[in-house]
Image (tube, rainbow, N blue to C red; front, top):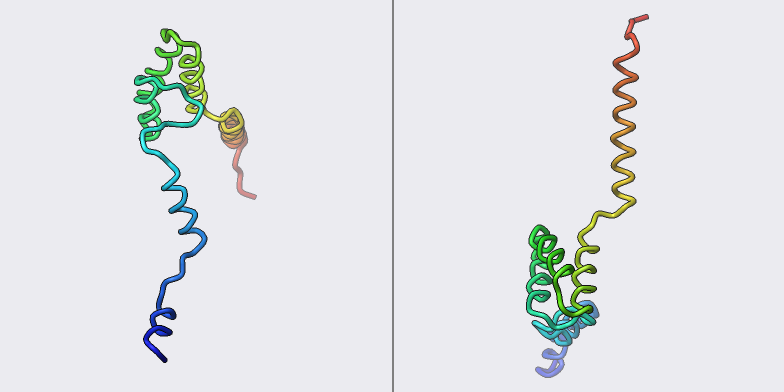
Length: 117
């Protein structure tokens, strides 16, 4: 085998997943924010807090920003951030149903006698 053929055989192949990730990293511009959001320093701070997972700060800041912002698009973006941290209504309903079922089964168990046959 020649040196060239051996060098070609050892060249690592780029997988599709890795190529997509590199293309996505190159396309994203840091500090640009989410597309469609207005440029506002307070909104950018709240968006960064959302990405970090600091939902208490987002809840407090976005609520204040939704009430007090001068521009309408900033108020809409703050309300959108608030909607993104609200719990899913289906998850809440399922949790309430599970608690109700647990309470019913517990009450049924304690209210009936347990006599051995």
